[in-house]
Image (cartoon, rainbow, N blue to C red; front, side, top):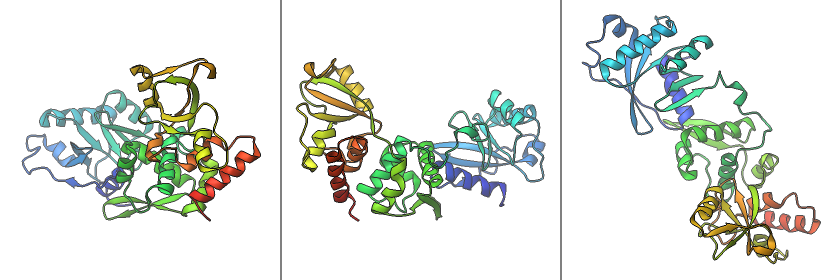
Length: 332
């Protein structure tokens, strides 16, 4: 099982994807605290998300007190150090946890619960219904990063924190992504030194075939628009992109893909105007759930997202051309 401190380090590394180092504070730190608090808790410093935190780890002989007692302990130490102090305890009953949350008492139960309102929250026991289940459709972040792994740069063996940096995602989001992949047996994680790294179950076409049932179209919705020129972040999509890669003809009005935020910026900046239909438009824009530019340098969207955006098309000729695109992108 390990000591409370060991379990704390493992838990924090799992949910943040980063190496965690606990440091002992200076010897004089806490010397003015009441003796019972000095006997009950071990103080540790933690650097997390570029911020220093002070933790108070309950000694193994102690029995976790009532919510009111825990709140009083945290408040006494916070006054002494002029900063929030997070209690680290072996376990907290659900009723006690709810009271501690209501009183704003920071606490961590390694392996299951974290409440640091000044930084982050992980109350998985309370929100068990949100746990990742096998067979569920992937979130946009999980899909985007898996396609990135297949097309752009292998993520095999990379620490979670580096994967988060590539996609521009938070530590909490990358943990959710990792959980989705693991729940569907697409990868497992391992510890290499102080980092948590990803190891995929397959590669190339085999990994695509495993994940493809979980993928969804990247297109959130399509809109007819009029613009003087395409947004800089727009990439050719739909039949416009497919016509570059196959024998399918382009539509008379070109189709482009934009990340949702870029579409909104275009509308707010006045360079892009939504219209009622094709008669008033000079383009069709697909709002994507993730940024198409992360997966392609242009001029068109990446081949795998293109396939997913058109895979439900009823025309057999389109399906044949999509198969050709897949064979080019991920040969057998």
